Length: 128
Image 1 (cartoon, rainbow, N blue to C red):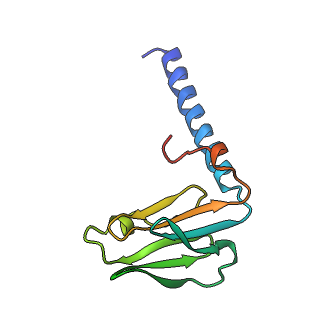
Image 2: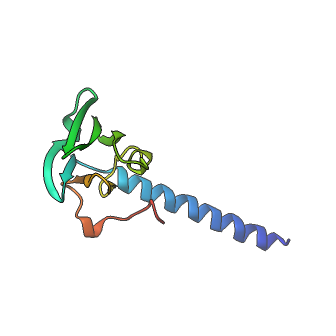
Image 3: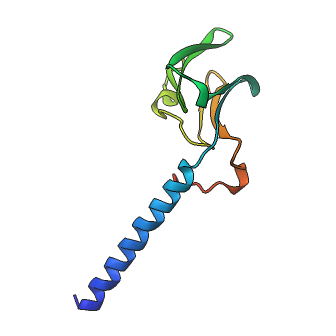
């Protein structure tokens, strides 16, 4: 490996880390985060996550099925569900605009959005 090969590899790594840093910084610049809970495609509740002082839970029912949602400062997540596979719980904490978790068997959705970001302008560094 020549000296120029090492310089090229180092430059590519440096550019990659700088790009990840810029994307992460861009995602963290959020004014107010809102959490939306939807049941059967209809908005059930909208919560200002920026104003949550202490974590609390909420039971969201859809017929005989239910999910328990935990809300905390700038984050929302499922902590319990009656669905068989529990994939919605495995998604974890939603804490950035555009993140979404769907419990398909129970037909309950939670998502996070911000007033300062337009959905079409967001950079999705999660999948980059």
